[in-house]
Length: 86
Image (cartoon, rainbow, N blue to C red; front, side, top):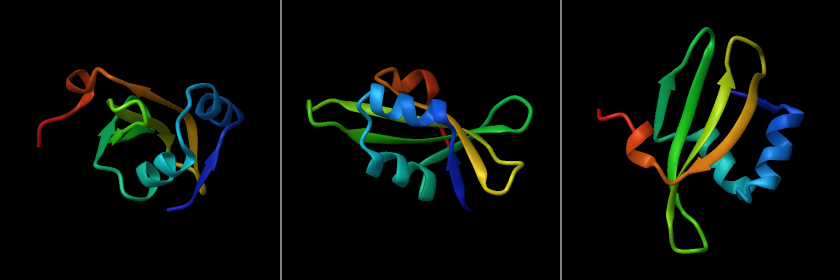
């Protein structure tokens, strides 16, 4: 699947200090995909950041377009809040 980053997603990626290779990995091989409201999905994966902490990187995707649009991206330390048991 192809993806296009919204301007907001590009700004948030930089502002939040998320390496682009982490986002690329989330988009190409997410550890989980969670359905959201309407036509949105959350692609998410866990990463070890340079500060030695593990964060969940979440990308909110609108996948009913071609290419799919990355609406925003963020990281959170509250992994258990968002991680879905399989």
